[in-house]
Image (cartoon, rainbow, N blue to C red; front, side, top):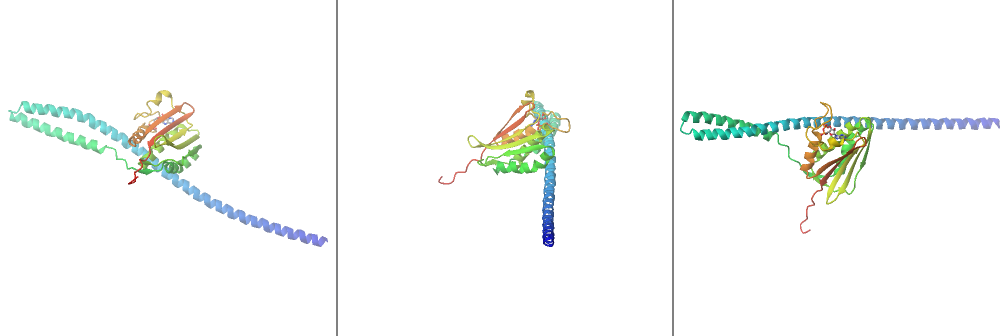
Length: 291
Ligand code: ADP
């Protein structure tokens, strides 16, 4: 009996060892699968981070261009007004001295040089005009999702939780997708700056009244003092140190939203966070013949 019991115990142990071996193999293959998935995920994160960095650099570049453009436009405008005045007076002088050939010739020379300057100023103004909107039907939910995927790694690294609430009934809007993406990234960048110690960022889409769509970007950051709220959208208004902020982000956002026929508003309370709301007109439905 003892021999039988020993035999049974041995075969039980062998089957146990087999099961452990199987389990080990299974574990190994699971670990291998998980490692591959992790490597892929890491690669994805690296790609997304690289894309985000590229977009942020583009954004900074665009802001610089906007500053340069604005300065040039101001310069051209400021120079253009006195030039017109001078030109008018020279014209009057030409008329007054019409019987003195030498003076008229000299004044005509002055006039032609003024015209040349005027031409340069006009060319400068033309070069600083904004590019036109490229309108197409845009699904704001997809836009939020793609921006969300883009910023997730950064949010994760900064211990910021990301939540999105997307309205499945959201109407399509007629918009320039790239420019709206820039608006979202600008607002998100500001939210990130306002939450240096982590927090929560949420983006919500909703169908608004009278065929409109809205996006709300809320953070739990430092908030904005009441005296800053009214100056927030002014170009060059910034509370950030030199080199970190240009104060153009929000003015560009407002310009883009206005061009889309929409509105942007802000609500904030110090220490509790900030919410930016954007309201955009939805795509005007095209009437079918006979409808
Ligand atoms: P910049 O980011 O270059 O300063 P912006 O026009 O984007 O320019 O923002 C202007 C200012 O508005 C910021 O400097 C900051 O003080 C304030 N601000 C914008 N968004 C937020 C936010 N989500 N939380 C707190 N302050 C904000």
